[in-house]
Length: 154
Image 1 (cartoon, helix red, strand yellow):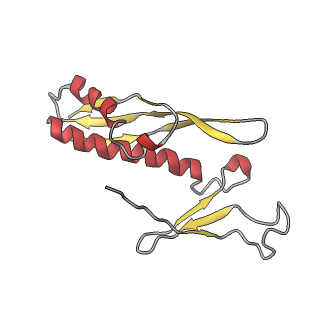
Image 2: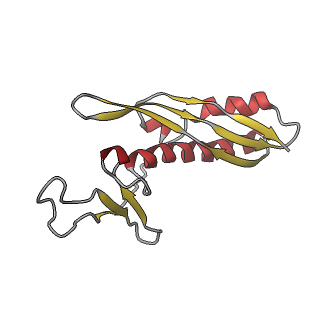
Image 3: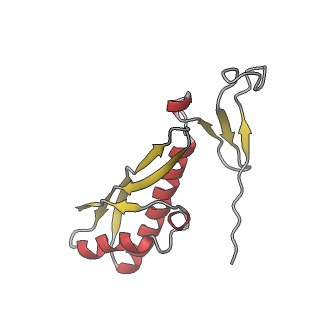
């Protein structure tokens, strides 16, 4: 079954002269999908972007983490692991070649998961390894993803 996802990107960085010169415009844009909140974005701060706005790299690592989380919650529920809280501080590791081209070389997901007291932590941990088989985003990237979960129980 085919799924389609669409977006609408609107460049907002025209200072009045368009791209008349390399430094004449801002690298800002909005993700403006009808019916959803607008997300203001910018280039990576290392490339002159606004550090207060999301950049493509932020969005990719966040999408990867969110997809993993949603599958984790689903599979944990199926396995009888009761999750009360879940947060992640993922890290994307990238490299830039001498010519300026960049790419992600790895990602580390570091979820902090609160589970009900008595939960089988071995089962809860093993779920992470199964997610890469089903997560839409994880199956779409070409770099390795590792997991460093931390479990708390209540």
